[in-house]
Amino acid sequence: MSGRLRVAILFAVAACGNKDAPAGSSGSGAITGAEKSDARDDWRMALHRSQTEVLAALRTAETSGLMVPVVAVPEPAFALGPAYIWVNKVGLVTIDGDAVTLTRFPDARVRRLTLASDGSLLVAGAKLQRVRGDQLEDLAGKGGPLYVSELAVAPDGTIWAGSVNGVWKLSGTTWEAAPPLGTPEHMESLDFDGSGRLFVTRMHSILVLDNKRWKPIVDTDELAKRIGTGAPRWTQTIVSPTGELWLLGCTYLVRVATDGKVTAELVPKDGLARGRFVAGELHGVGCLGGDTLVRTNADGVLTFTPTKTPARAKVGPVIDARGRLWATDPTKGIAIVNPDGSATTYPPGSIPAISGDVTAILVVGAGPDKLPIGIEISRGTITGTVHDRGVPVAGAAVEICRYPSGASKTTPCARSSDVVRGETDDNGVFRIAAALKTYRVAIKVNDRWYRLREKECTGIAPDGECSIGVVDPIRSSEPDAPP
Image 1: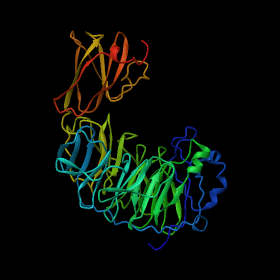
Image 2 (image 1 turned 90 degrees about the horizontal axis):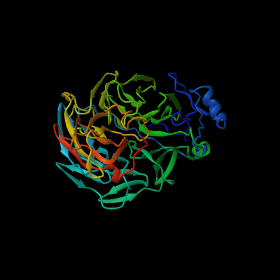
Image 3 (image 1 turned 45 degrees about the vertical axis):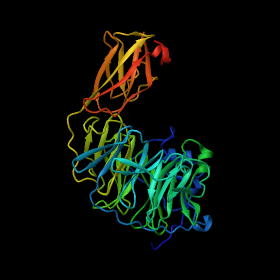
Image 4 (image 1 turned 30 degrees about the vertical axis):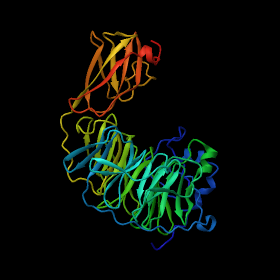
């Protein structure tokens, strides 16, 4: 890289999480210097005047002491690769071409997937493990991250993990702690540049580990403490093959050029979630903003493409090297969105192996060339017996859905898009056929609704059955609301 990063950047007012902020627009605004810094104490007025007014304070290397040379990363490979999908309480689903295979690991709690330097699949959450055929091999002993929320492999092959209790490097089978990050805070991403320098994105700060010290690229902790709601939130840092630094957040995509010039482009009102540098004709950053794909070429020109994904996908988005976005929602299934906005969708049950909540997705390289052919929705059966103080209840209303709510004024699943209803027979038994995914159960006894919080059905096989057993809610729990 010919230049050095000469800014400690930037705080940008975030619309997401700020109920007083106006909605985003389709325009863009660029910030290239400190001309906006006079407004630093008047951020509310600036925000309400125009969403394109970014409240920003730029600090140069002379005032901050920050001189971080960013080393370019290799151009992303366009080679085809599999897609890995982890299903809670089920296991690993591999999509390779139009073939779908399931390896069962029902007891593993997994939050992140990535590839090791030798090409093996790493899974992390409660533990860091390697997939070896139909077995999970523990890679680390006790200690280290409390729960792995982020996982990355450095260019030299070392494995790094991020958690609320800091950043850790795996040395052999032992976790080594990186220098402390200060106040515990949710970690959004771990990213490396081409030299192995580590960037950590947290909600209100982006830092780089340089000579065993954390240095701020963005630090808005003090601003967050001062203004509370409306404080910036960052979601990811990306280093490009040209050595540029891209910062994703609400509601701007910030680009730091190799000469230190900073520009910020307005994105959809929900801000940016995850992105990556993509190869091929796109040659730029792709990411998801709300229900819109945001893409930029090497010149920083943005395009906005409406997608068919849920506005707030529960897992993902993950973008493959050809620019396809993979995202999932527990009630709506999986969507794979092409750069032009067209999508292949798989409702729950159309890929029988994915029969529960997806907790992690990894797409290798450009992903599979072919996608599975969705089949007719497979179904299973949820069954149980309802008692009232030991006596079977006939005609009791039963609802199943992903998220029964105690706040509903009608029935617990009234607001759910995936509700299925039934009732008990003369023996108090109910049997409800439903598409394969995760369900919880609510029942109505003596005109009162009860959510059975501990009764969950997941991982049902096609034409299989999940029994919640005998439930006697009046003996075991309190009703959600009066009749």
